[in-house]
Structure formats: C-alpha cells, structure tokens
Length: 580
Image (tube, rainbow, N blue to C red; front, side):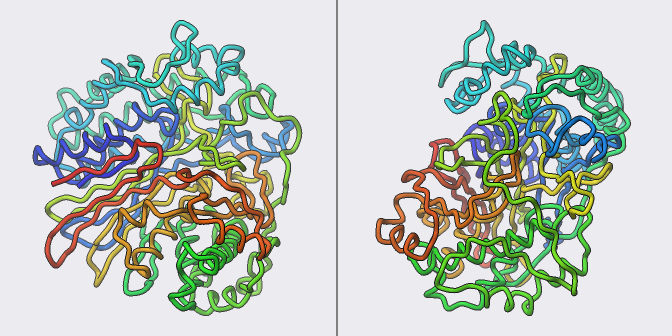
C-alpha cells in the first residue's frame, strides 16, 4: 500500500511495489516524484524526517534529513544585517539541504533497487513534463512580482514566456532532470550498488551541486524582510552534513505505542498532548463535540508552549524525559478548565524557568515582497491554504513500513539556481536570534523543524504509518486522527475525513512568528452548536470553510491477518491511496 499527498507519487510508489521493490524503494521513488509534481510544497533543496521499521527489526527508527545551519550562520551576523528575525525567504534562511541525502541513505541501507531505476520516474516527469495542479499556479501567481523584479531565474523556470501556468498545463524542469542524470552518472563504473549510491552522495555534497548553489547565492538578493542579503552557506557546509538515524521518542496510549522524532522536531508535542489527554474520560476526547474540541485545544496549547520553551537541537535529554512523564502531564492536565486560556503557559522543568519567546500579534517591521505565501503554514488566519509540505506512507508485503514528511525548498523559498533547477530552503526561519533560546540560530546545529511523521505499534509490531503536511498543525491534526481511531473507533478514512480544527494560540514557527491568543481555526462542518459553544468558552474562533484543514494519509498492516490498509485526504482532491 502507498498513500501520499499527490496521485503521481502514490502511483509511482505502488508501481515499484508491484515490480518487486520493497517499501523503501517505493518511498524513495515517490519522494523524488514529489519534488517534481509538488514544487510549491517541497524540493530537492529542502529537508525531511522519517520514521520507519523493517520486517527484520520492528524497533521504530527516525531518519534525520534535517540539515544544520551553515558555519557562518551566527546570531551576530544576522543582527549585523539589521535583522530581528531570520527571514522567511531568501538565502539567509537556508539550512544545509538534507532531504536528498537522507532519501539516498535510506535507499542504500534498506532498499533493494538500483538508484538509477528508483529515480527514473522523477527524471521522466521533470524532463518530459506533467500536468500541473492548480495550486502550483496559484502559488506562482502570488509571488510573480517578486520573481519578475528580484528573482529572474525563478521567473524563467516557473513563468516561461512571462505567463503563470494554469491548472492542467504541462510543465517541465529540464535542469533538474539533467542534475539527477549527472548525479547518477557519477557512479558509472563503480563496482557495487552501494558504491554507486555513495558516488551520487559525494557529487551532491562535494561536487557540482554544492558549488553551483554556493556560488549563485553569494550575490545579494531580496529576502522576505524587504531587504537584500547574500547567503552564508559554503561548500564545506554541504560536505559536512551526512544524513543518519536516531532513536524514536515513544509513549503508550490506549494500548498503542506512538513513535515520533525527538525534540529537534515537534514530534514530542503529539506525545505530550496524548499524555495529558490520557487522564480524561473517553467522553471528553471526541473532537466533534464542544467539550472534546475544547479539551483537545487546551491540551495542545500546553504542549505547544512547552515546544517553544524547551525543544531544539540543544534540548536537554533530562528535560525532555520529564516533559513526557506521566507526573508532568498530570500537572499540565490540572491547568485545563472549562474556559479557554489566552495565556502562553510553558511549564517549569527540573527547577528551571522556561524560555519565553517574543509574543507578537502583528508582524514586526515592513512585510517583504511576496511574504503572504512564503513559509510552510498550511493556513493563514482565514484558513485559506497557502504554503505547505508533503507526506508519503508505504507498507509492503514483508512488513516494512515507512512514514516520511518531505518539505522545504519550496519554489518560493529563494531564487532558483538555474544550472540545478531548484532553490534552497528556508528552515532557519524557525530559529530565534536569541542566544538563550533552546532553538536559537547556532552554526552547525539543526533548526527545530515542524516535520513530524508518526509510526504506530501494538505489542511491539508496527501497524500503521501516518502523517500530514501543515507546519504547526501537523501534530494537531494527527492528534484528532489518533483520538478518533484509538478512542472513537473510527476507520482510518472516516477519521481523515472528519471535521478538523487546530489552535493558533502559540508563536508561529514561520516568519513572521506571530500568534493569536486563544485562537482556534475550525472547519464549518464541526457544526454551529459546537462553534457557538467554543466561543462561549472564550475561544477566538475562525471558520475555515467545510473542507480545508488537514491533508493526512496513512498506510498500515494488521499483523494478525496480514491485511493491508491505506487512506488519503480528500481535501484538495490531490491525495491518493493505492494498493492491493
């Protein structure tokens, strides 16, 4: 079974499975297709995180595809450029690209196919074209002025002839096809499959890709701050990053093990929220009711406040262990009342006071050209879908299972590098220019990412991979899914289709880092009585429309019967689940 946020990626992954490939071959093939067909949602210059288990070892493992800040990316340098925040777009926001190396490492260690065969579908779609979805054109139209006036290489690639592509237009990216072919050719003559993959990696990290990207971004260019700056990334930064693996963070909830990234991502938010909610009766945990929606929103505010106070590459392991403890969850649970909180309430851990980020309700300074669509938040205050990311889940006949969330490197992140056919990402916007922050900008350290795939296990056996695009909303929407399936008894597709909601009562992870005290965004389908009840409790409710929030997918396997299942999001008519 394969499920993802775009039908061509799902079909590609499934075609690999049908031809004997395993879940890792399929996931990598699908991921490189996502770079091509959802360029407004992810790209080769971006990042990814994954969580997976193999048929031979059911222990959940995190795949780290989040690159670090360059060596010259210091708080002092950015402050010296006149910045109070890391911009949401432009080369100064670029972490070292991690997605491509991570996917190739996963293929090397757990796949079976040759790299050239895995990449063939992506190369074909980039060279020969594919019919573009309308949201690509909408995104390009939003930044057309920025492209024309400041990023001409982006205009040349995404607005050929000066025209924004329309829904169904066939678009190509021949430069990216040539880049992939050159990377594959680097391994020609190597003696083994692993050696061919390693040659690809060396050329990406130390060869023409790194050189072209670094040289191009040396020229000052427009950032979302409205000012021009040169990037600080160097070839040595590319060469110094190598994707790898780390242990997953886990808790037990209602008989299910939930496996997530550690605090370099926001994965523990979901675990903390589940810990808090585990102390409530089932009747209090139905997000389709006023009481359930209120309880969920309040638990999420507390978990997200701890995220912003304690998570980051410099997070103390002892602090994280306490954040996930049942004892700490009990203290947080006691803060939930019948009224909506409009406060930012991180907890005190180990006698240490929490970091308090700036709490802004309005963007500081002037809004840069093209800002409204730059960044990863799935929705603005009105709930309209804008920037986003991607997701893919695969499970195979042998019991291998992988959940992965590729993102960053959106076509609107920074100017297109013409010889490569892609741009670098903007993940550093999630860091603070404050040395005291656990997620401060630090050379060589990973920014705290929002990418947060999930793996579920029962009795130590993987049963489901799931995830969603959505920036700060990713774990919020996945929480609704888990409550509905593990507590409410919903089938996966029912849970994905059910009305969604989330809080905006925390500092956003993306530029300009604002928050809405007490904010709650809800789909209209939750019902007038529920919305009125939330407002009466003090929530500041924004109606987003009936089918706007969440783009979940999942794929799983029943270990008792061997029966596989998958489900995908119907919102946007783009997600797709397929299998046999």
